[in-house]
Length: 175
Image (cartoon, rainbow, N blue to C red; front, side, top):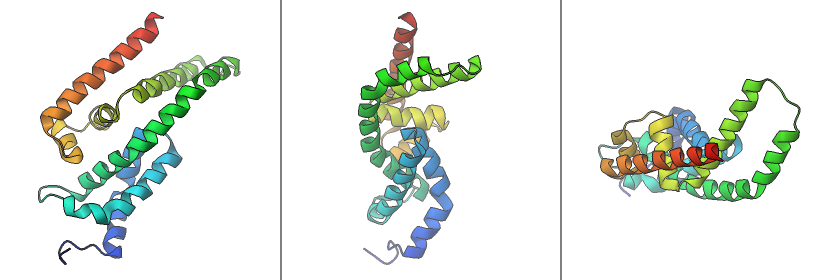
């Protein structure tokens, strides 16, 4: 590794100070849990030195970090989806048995749960694009840079992800 590409502990600390909040917010949106998001942040910054050679001249450290985070999130999301599928029955029955609070809180809680289940059903690639473009309101070109894929691929994945989410919500409302 050349000296101009070498990263020191101070550089990692600086990168952490400058970008950890955005990486944590992105991770939280991907995995939905604060503790898992914190784990992803740590894994992301630990992986940074090895990933620096992949940083393109036009790329930013933040884009590289978000890409690393998206890759690490794949395993967390898959494991969480398996756990949610196993516990879905118990969660639904416990929601019915809880003391009722304000009607709006219940609806929001149910909507969050439905959205989380629908997101879990998406592939990792579709989920990441939805979070980047729909939740974080990034452009398809920004998402393409973060994920190191063509912009047309981002738009195609976004189209299919939105269609799958509409189908998931349509099927649930029809039943």
